[in-house]
Image (cartoon, rainbow, N blue to C red; front, side):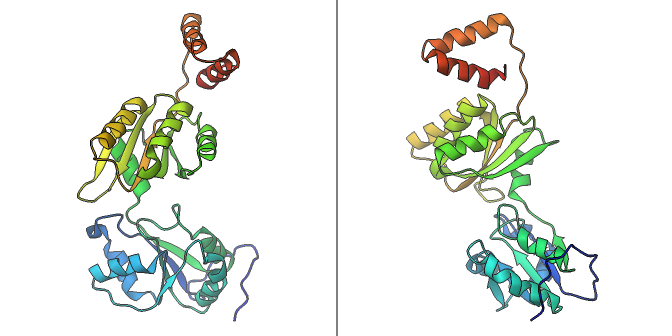
Amino acid sequence: MKKVSKEEPRQYDKNLNGCLYLISTPIGNFDDISLRAIKLLETVEILLCEDTRKTKKLLSHLNIRRKNLVSYNDNNASNKRPEIINKLLSKINIGMVSDAGTPLISDPGYKLVKDCHLNNIKVTHAPGPSSVINGLILSGLPTNQFYFGGFVSSKKNLKKKQFIATQTYNMTGIWFDTCLRINNTLAVMLEVFGNRKISIARELTKTYEEIITSDLNSVIKIVDEREENNNPLKGEVILIIDGYVKKKFDNETLSVIIKNKLERLSFRDTVKEVITETKLP
């Protein structure tokens, strides 16, 4: 077995080692697969999959029959990386897919790419669908600058910390979440971000694709009404929220804000909320 290098990266030699192909797959509609992706799915010697069962469904749809599917996910990645690197060093070409969309975006894999660079192994990408980009361009929110926050924490206190850390970013934010906790997430967003514009994207590229875009208060009302009418949002969602815009507060406006808050909060809590909302010292 070849020794896996931990040295500084070197320029790769295409004749020396195998290649790691990152292959984007559809996020919902199987027709979105690229011709290059199909060719690679047919020809790579080993195919790394986040979940082999889900990848088999795609391969079956494409009439691709292959046996050498290898599970590679958060649970086994650290143990399997050295073996994968050694196969690549033995001139074996390997493909990598996630359950859906572009690999490595909130999926396992970046450490494998890092180790490839350290071991003179070429890494390339067969581009294709990405739910992050798809959700962003359908939201109607600014696309010139944005950040991706990943999955929203299931714990309220950690969720709040995630949002506070990005509260003053003057660019569009993108988050992954599940409808099982969407009510809590939207409430925390309203508390931290204020009544900003937000878009909920779900079932992207599928028959029942849905985009809900409005201010946070209105979106919360829509979600609540859907639940009351036994038509709740289901599945995973992408939350796209408008960036921070610095507001100017004159003395009169500030006085009204403080007065309204003092009617329901203590002096200390009023000071904290006013500082948070206005960013005044």
